Length: 421
Ligand SMILES: CC(=O)N[C@H]1[C@@H](OP(=O)(O)OP(=O)(O)OC[C@H]2O[C@@H](n3ccc(=O)[nH]c3=O)[C@H](O)[C@@H]2O)O[C@H](CO)[C@@H](O)[C@@H]1O
Ligand SMILES: C=C(OP(=O)(O)O)C(=O)O
View 1 (cartoon, helix red, strand yellow):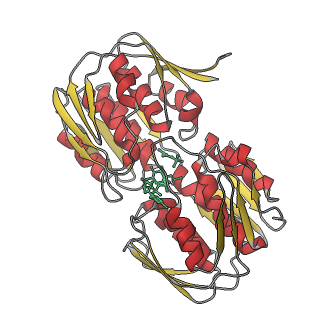
View 2 (cartoon, helix red, strand yellow):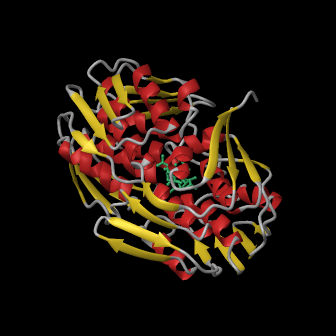
């Protein structure tokens, strides 16, 4: 079992190197399997557990994969993909497994999904994915545990998503790329990671327009070819490091952020955190008390739900009462109980949380219930008095690469341990 141990009180200072985006690299690995010939090269790959699971899953269906960790580079040869089965023991360990379905459908005419994992955040339906496949001509057998999707060939259609699902949009784009004719996806997701995937698919030969507008048009092509692509920076990793500077009264230069932090930056600025861009480097510092904040999570360009938990930690350290409204997931407040064990005062009422700060935080033994509550507890540990022990660190490692080493380089007192239980 992986465990993080954090001793609080150190201000974080220095240069923080931001990793490549988890939520872009996973669909890109799925996209690489669409190329029947050649080798795909992905650069700036974050060395996280989800990528390791995606590599295992790609190998399980017959792809040849090299993960060069030091070079943060993946080489994928999908020419020998031969098994339609996404085995439960790998697929149930991460959400990104759902992104392998379109390639298997196109390459083998079927996909057998033995399970899909991911953070436990309440209901996480896949009905938009399966309804979309059906409208493109696939047959979907939804068994109790195994889902079997079959298609002798897909044909373009007009698709509508009730809400702009992130992986749903990526999956339907990938399904439409090699379908016959034109597909229109209405109410498509606008996330920058989706646009990065569209960029890669375009290089592969796909004909996709409308990315970032909510209405995506895909003209089907006969084949896609292997390409080289550099994964965009992880805006969630960047947000966490910005918050780490804020709550430790530190000063960080974020390198690799590339994109603007958007609403996260504006919210932190409202709390009293200062940002300053110098060319490609984003500086963040805080040397005064934090003000309370109101947050409403939403799809892009709204406040990302994946930063809601880390922001709850920041709010607990602000002087006054903050309000958080979680609108994407119906079970994403597991952090509250753990933060309260450390001395926070967080009250949850349905989809809303009231955070009464500032209360001094004291280190104790806490549990990560999902990736983002895990990293939020690391943040709490950085600002707490004494030692915070966080289990299970595997969940944090699902999405943040070399976290302890990167934070230690900035002055944090944090270790990653492998424990017996
Ligand atoms: C690997 C990946 O990219 N994960 C991200 C992706 O997850 P994921 O793509 O799973 O999230 P979605 O955008 O699909 O889900 C958002 C909401 O829509 C609902 N829904 C979704 C699909 C569907 O077919 N039916 C349905 O009802 C879900 O139950 C959930 O309440 O976007 C989430 C929301 O930004 C992020 O938290 C995750 O980090
Ligand atoms: C919810 C998340 O991930 P996943 O969709 O991979 O479970 C996340 O990254 O916070």
